[in-house]
Length: 457
Image (cartoon, rainbow, N blue to C red):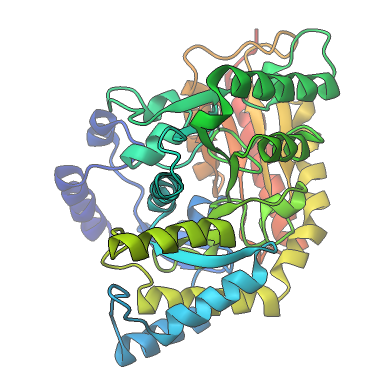
């Protein structure tokens, strides 16, 4: 086992460029090789067990090793392993999944376009909206509004929408006209003496002022995650999304809900927009749609968007966009079965029931000398580590303490994500009360050990 692990690690170091990784540090430290998974646990190549506290990458809703998904994938692979949906071709799994997605989606989102990833979905959103506005004789209506610290993907257009410096630096993005708005995170961006309600009002005023300054006739859409994920698990202030929707409607600006992390029960509702009380014109979905057993994502959109696109495709003779694996039959079959499991086992209800246990348990860590804020909604939560609790001062450099916490977490048998110095949890929806309690025990030990090593200012 050790010899095999060593040879695999050497091959990995020699050949693979890893996402979100310091490639030179990786050459020195090597990989953590995950060999198998079952339920909420994964095992590395040495046999060590971990609780996968981030569901892989915010995505394995039904846990690892779900036999029903394996069976459906094998059956579909044997029957029709691949076919495309170009030029009016289709197949049953893709059709059935579209029916299911529309059934689950907020009212009015009646149409589906498939991609392979959330990044591709958000690229597709931009292309669809531009295509629509050109068709409607509004070629100047192309700008997108997006928030600082937003995450919408890493392909060139999606990275342009993303509001994280690490996704922009030296990549020469943004490539498209994006107008940035303040991140709706009260702890970090509220002003001295400002209440959360006043903070929300200021952000909505900023949105109105930005639209007035840029010109509503130049702005195509506003895109946002209902709860911001990879920016640090950032729930919005109360009333924020209702206010955003009202302003967008008044200015003929499409509202795009990026549900790649929020969707399919993570917040205890089918989609995050339902949790926060707004109805989008377009949604992008992925991750928990198939529990990431197969790569798949989709864009759901309203009749007005569809009709403009359909009319233009008739005029031109084609909708000149698509991917080889759009609506892949194995991926759509697996996703459909995954959604059936989520519904049959009431995993959305499970998320609602377990949310107080996770959120209250995490809030007990507020007394740790390194914890500045605890936040989250549903089965997603985080603690932000700070150098000084009174001033909210960050560690310098940002991320070093978070990286150390991740190492300790691994030693304690818990995998979470260090987003800078924010430690994020997003456990599988199949968790039990005992699982949540054990996650909290391991996170508590991690934070205690970290505090013993690092003295706050």
